[in-house]
Length: 157
Image (cartoon, rainbow, N blue to C red; front, side, top):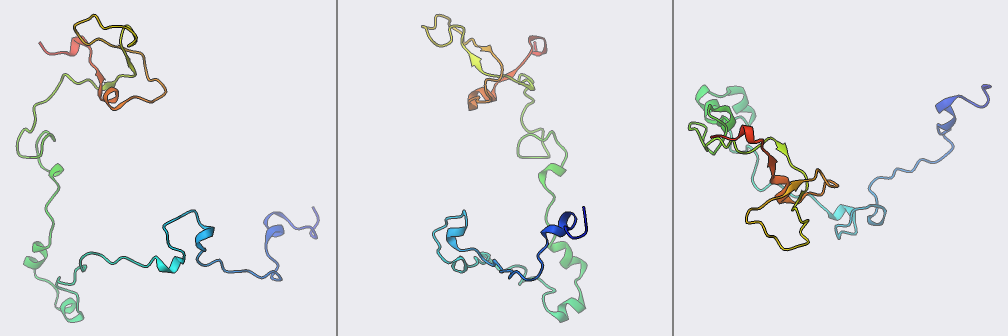
């Protein structure tokens, strides 16, 4: 290609003769947001519900120069999250065993559950029986998503 035609991105660069408009804030009709405000400047800013660290030491210049004592620093520390404590991770207390281990829940999720008669006829069995037919369009109900497969060999007792 010759130099007169330009190469790559050089072709698409503005030459300075075109006026570049600053878009700034878009008008309400130019956006996909509809929050009921016609002028974008009317949206405003919502301040926080409480002041941030205004009551803390070290806000003024003299307090920053003086520094904080160790007791003041320790008083501002936040406690560790409950996950940092020992325990089994179940329940709301890290210092106890929490809930009992439920080993009757399998780790493999079942798919769509279908009754033997596919729900079309009267149910003649006393027990609830269903067959896992696999994931059916990934549209399992909440109840079906909660079901897990457990091998009979893994059951206690």
